[in-house]
Image (cartoon, rainbow, N blue to C red):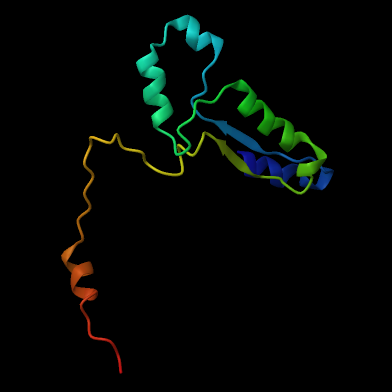
Length: 113
C-alpha cells in the first residue's frame, strides 16, 4: 500500500513512507503488567539487544516528515533494533544447518583449467 500510494501521489509532490515499529515498551505495556523476564526476552530478540520506546519510533517519523528526507518516498522503514534483519536464537538453543546432497556434490566439482 505504501508503494502504491507513493506512486499515485508523487506527481503532486506528496511523499508516502511507512514506519514499522518493533516491540517498544510503553506505559500501556507497563500498566498491563509485563514482567521483567518478558521485557528481557523481548530485548534479547534484536540485534542491538536494546529496548525501544515511543521516542525511537517518533524520531523516525519526524525524520521522514522533514525536508532532510525530501528524496525518500515509497520506503518501508523497520525501526526495531534489527529484530527483522536476523533471527536471534537464545544462547542455549542449538541451530544447525544441513547441506543438501546436490549442493554438496556441486561444491566438489573439479576446477576448470
